[in-house]
Length: 248
Image (cartoon, one colour):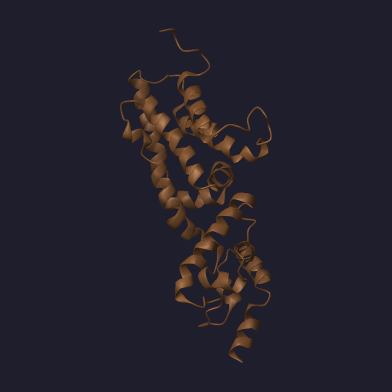
């Protein structure tokens, strides 16, 4: 009798979550099940972490493919090969899922990308080179990163950008701009550069080609390009432009 009640309670959960997300997700748990019920509880404690990780991976893949706003919890569950009940056991709302992703997936990534200029405070070329290399490395370690960054961080109105700004502000951005301005004043960097656009330029020269790589893998002129090639090109264009190096 209890199992029958549980099955009835989770029927139509996708429709309920769509309505809940339209209202901001506040009542998603009320749509899911009566108080005290634990829908989709794993059948063994050892499977819990693996199932949860699969749901996070599925969410990242969908967010990168179609955006956060257009992704429901039910879709994430199906992408991971689970039932909506299993999804609701771990994450009651999309906002809760996004907060977990920020804490567990984006914070390590953000830490890896931070500090490139601080590592080379007196050498702007080395600092910019390190930033480009780290961006390419992160994209290789996390295949969802390029598309998700373009869709949800660089694009206007990206939900991830909003949540990240709410959580962390723009201290990293300010620090990067201060380094660029300092190097310009010291005569170590081109004064014609716009400090606020340098990081965006590095992103455009590294992440954008990686995010669109599936579109040109059959292009004979570019299909053999590697991530290292993209990083090298970005650094050369940023640090030397199109002017050939002076003769030794």
